Image: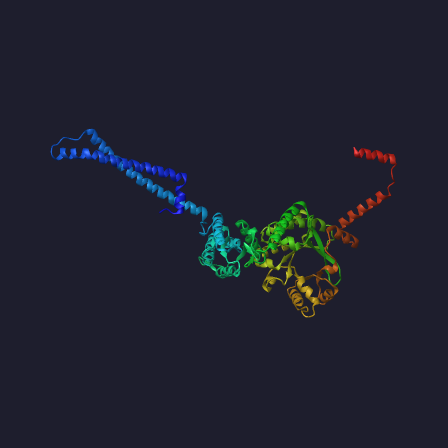
Length: 570
């Protein structure tokens, strides 16, 4: 008996043509057999009689027709068998092509296209049984790093093992698909009154995937991020989730939220996530547009010698002056710029502006610039930075590069090389936000840093009598032992300043000395205190003299002014 799939296959035009060819070949064979029976009844007795009893020989034309008939029988039957074999082979090829079109060849899971069909079938069954649907998106964390470090062959093996482990923990009726790259998704029906059942499934997935992957002696620790969406909420069935595509999209939003919250976790979709994603998308578009139109500008925070109160330099801070959103904090746009791959262009754009403005400062004022960990992954970063200094004729000894502690753990060899290259050219290098990462004493001893910056979170504790200043004291003592100067950031009030002054000779910055300022505001400040370079001071004096002379110049007669105005207007 033919199954439904066979019935569908027989309805195709190609199959109908093959069936016609089968019937023709079979008809030829049947006709030849009938003719053979008819001729054989008259020819064979005459032939046997002439051979064994000297009887009359059969009619030669009848004998020839009989032989031709035998040939037709053999030909027709053989051709029929060949066609049957050809049809069977083509059906196997069609089945293989269908599987390739619906199944991911690497993992054996459904692919994105066939998942839609399977989801529709599961929805129909769930509706009949009064159940809800849950769609789960699964993404392997840091898969690109696995590929980069161990090669694509091991990466493929990890994906195969991951798919196997996920499938082993899913309900029998659930459908699993590889949606692309390291992203998987599964859909399953569940009792809307027992949402915890889906939580149990996800918990089993984490338990299974948390076990290390081993391939050819290489041990891989991997984790996953999961987003879950359902077509039921506290009010029952959600009409917005009647479309499988919408359900999948919301699961994807929840998975992205899990990634953003630190990975290796899962979240159910909530409407606020969609609003957050929409806002992020606006930020991404705004950042790219702002970079093209010059909306990012450097601001400068004063750095002061705590003992004398003398201004010794500035730290450049990034600001985004968005026409739509106003002044945007770097805590918002810097992480996004890093993720979308524009942080290097953004930093270079800001640094160029800062070098142009800082070249007019007094020669003893330094410019400190914080460098993103993403930039330090570029082995040519030091060369690019030194090229900028040459282009703007900026003295290297006046530039201080700040590297956060977290950078030391990504590629210590590359960081060491970059630091050495910069210091060889006279650029100072400091370790920023010290105490918030995991740098070791050995790293501080062997890496050629010029300065330690204490994170503001520790400086703020100086006002707390219970916590006291033990951590800051320890860092200051460490710097003194390693002969590294100290900068304290986040000095907000006089009490903190007084506490820091008791600890030795330090440099500091914070709102106690004023808010970050634009380049023009800094220029005015330095001009008032006589801390512009001689060249900049001379240009300023010349401009001031010209303005003063213009204000004292006699006014020309009115009719001459009118004539001049008319000529300019033309």
